[in-house]
Figure: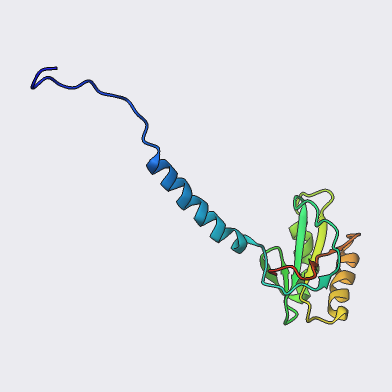
Length: 138
């Protein structure tokens, strides 16, 4: 090599910026994932051993909050229009599964009234969601 001669270029991949970007994205997804739930915050009742919650595809989630307010998926619904809203939520789904998330402070009577309304609408086999006793979160 002589003075003033250009040095040959070496092609090397610098992965440090890539790792930085991936770690930042990972942290963002970890923080946002718990907040991506549908419906209001509901304090679920405890159970010793809940069965698997099953597949979420084709599932209509009905939530009843502490005040007795009704939600279908993540939309609030007035009690007098609940049957119409549940039919609209079904859409083109041929065999939807309806599950109820009721707050632990509710009387069973309030949950049962929602179950009766769903049954009168023509749906059969409503499921209830609970959390494992001692489990963290809602």
